[in-house]
Image (cartoon, rainbow, N blue to C red; front, top):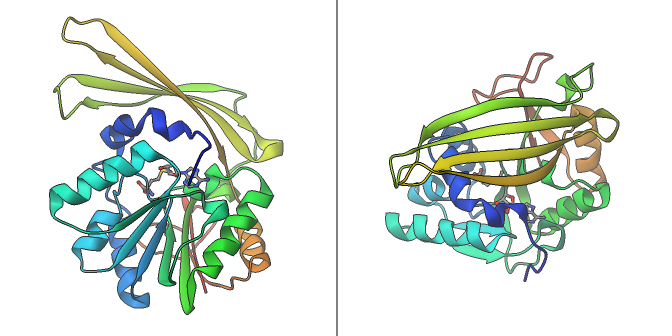
Length: 253
Ligand SMILES: C[S@@+](CC[C@H](N)C(=O)[O-])C[C@H]1O[C@@H](n2cnc3c(N)ncnc32)[C@H](O)[C@@H]1O
């Protein structure tokens, strides 16, 4: 049972507003799941964006997340689509489930939410204990090799404006990013601006820290936790990892 609060508790609705149409990685997981087989475990499954297409493809899926509100949204998404999945509220660092899995996924930068190395290793070791003897772990992270050069000490960018699917009124997201290269992380503040029916502005703010990883750092972490890296890709088209790659997608066994 997760007791610690999680920033995602506060913006589960806005996470879906932003990511419901983010489908660029779905085929990657469908393809890998077809290669490695089920059952599938998604760690940090959030609101079920990836669980739903995997369940719809016929895989037995289990999702774990520490945020109750994100899991509630996952449950409604799956129910709405008539799909089944096992959902469990736990922290990745202390994962304890019955059963083992052939394909284990940590998608969309979620592993970067583990800031401390001990938490990263605990999560990877726990994942290892939940893998079948031929099980695979897939991690998708931003390519940290591109980071660390001279970057602005802070920047505020307009990230996205699009309608709220419930009200039709626009929501705008701004991101304040303060890179901390020596710690290999970004201090992020998300601002979501929306108008109520009278036109008054409501602003929601969420703070997050996101760690970035270089390729060989990630490989060493995985090896230290009992995994062996088999494949490294640089984008969702599964092109080989290279110096210009935007993603760092690792498949370990
Ligand atoms: C970027 S979202 C990813 C959600 C989903 N995998 C997707 O691709 O849309 C990250 C998720 O990680 C969860 N999370 C963060 N820290 C966690 C932890 N220590 N243990 C379990 N879940 C965690 C958050 O609650 C959030 O739902």
